[in-house]
Amino acid sequence: MSDNQLDELKNKATELGDDFKQTVKEAQLKGEEVLDDLKHSAKEAKLEAETTLDDLKQDADVQKDEAQAGLNEKVNDLKTKVETAKETAQEKLDHLKEEASHKIDEAKLKANELKKEATDKLGELKVQATEKFDELKKKATETLSKFKKDDQA
Image (cartoon, rainbow, N blue to C red; front, side, top):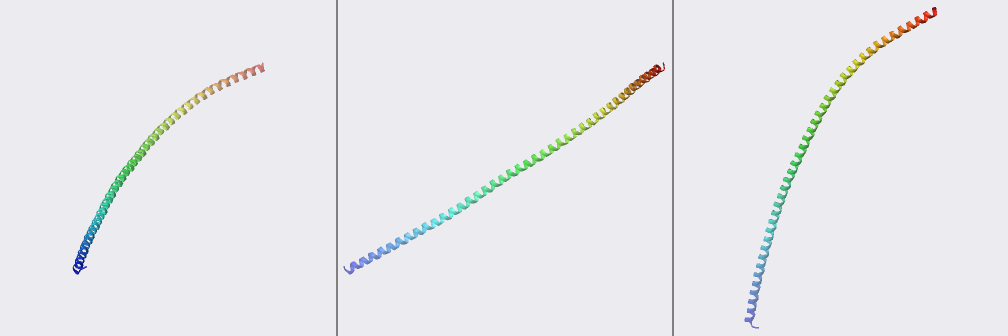
């Protein structure tokens, strides 16, 4: 092989080496671009995930607040109902006490009436008993007198 051919081969090899170097550099640049794109996409995905997570947290907080408000409302409603029930029960108790007081007063009046009637009846019976006793006494005296007369005769 001649020096000329050898020089040509060297030049070709150098050209090929330079082309290869250029291709490697381009591939390296493409790889770096792809890596940068992946990093950028990862950052965007991370930001989007954080945003979604913040939104979910806000939604959860809103739902929690709404649930708490609903619960508080129900608790207040129950408190109101309990208070109303207490008031109603107290009113009924007061009414029953009043009715019982009236019934007791009526019973006392009736007892006093019955006592008066019993006293009057007892008085009448005493009078009748006294009259009957006097009558029996008179008959007994008459019978005794009659026996005494019969004994003397």
